[in-house]
Length: 339
Image (cartoon, rainbow, N blue to C red):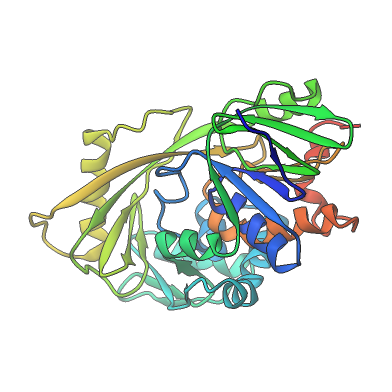
């Protein structure tokens, strides 16, 4: 097989974190090659939520983590403009019996909110979204792509050698954005151990051709959001699950909750149910940054891959350029010291 000699930074993985990192590096003037087998990944099986407010309130995050999500959100306007990603900044709404509790949690975390106790609704303008299909396509512009599966990574004099199903590729630096996949062969033991800390979470969504809502609506058990000319219903969070086959029973429960969020009587819908597997670290925050010898991680964002994409990208790019990380909470070294 041929050897691709690349002076580029190699990014392994074309999900939200991988492509955000590739786009950020490219716009800083670096040559970037993305290696990915293609097909539908977990970032495509998503609603594209950029939602620090309600994600923080739903998960009852501590203030420091909520603030980190907010910082990630704040990078999106400039990042979207630079990469031609369409950013939807319409307000999001929570509906249901826990509206008062949601309003209280948002207030405690310092997020703007408007609570309507009569209709049990909370609205915030702090949560936005992207369309994953449009965003993935936009982030790929200007980035070299090699459609192949990475199999192993080896350190050589003067660089790194990535073995793939399309042949070996040599690069100066490598960013691993491999989600919850098994570690590549050839990695240092400590890097392999860090990657094994990333565990799978399956998420299921349903794509509907009908436009059910013009803004993100959330409530107990489900959300409904606009998606292109239609809508998306989501989403489950199933730790430890890797199957990409949708579960009819869980999807049925999610659909029932979605009708309650909409406040409508259930009716027949044509729904394309999909499942994707994302990765999470033990503390729910991604690992982003150097693990030594020209190797960097961008993995484990739980369900906040789209929200944290630009923040992870900037963190990785800064370290590649020799700058200290602005987000030590994301450093892989928080789990173990890597030489």
